[in-house]
Length: 50
Image 1 (spheres, rainbow, N blue to C red):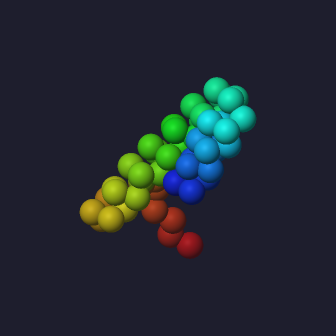
Image 2 (cartoon, helix red, strand yellow):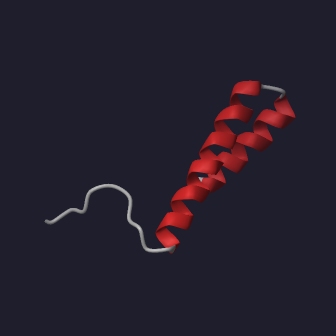
């Protein structure tokens, strides 16, 4: 998710399309937040028992 966000930011900046830049920034921030939460041991979502 982080890589996709950074890629969209770069494409949005090069082409001048603002929505790609915004979506990329949001995806990158969410990806970093989930990576940090995963690194400190707090899983997100429901556990699956199957």
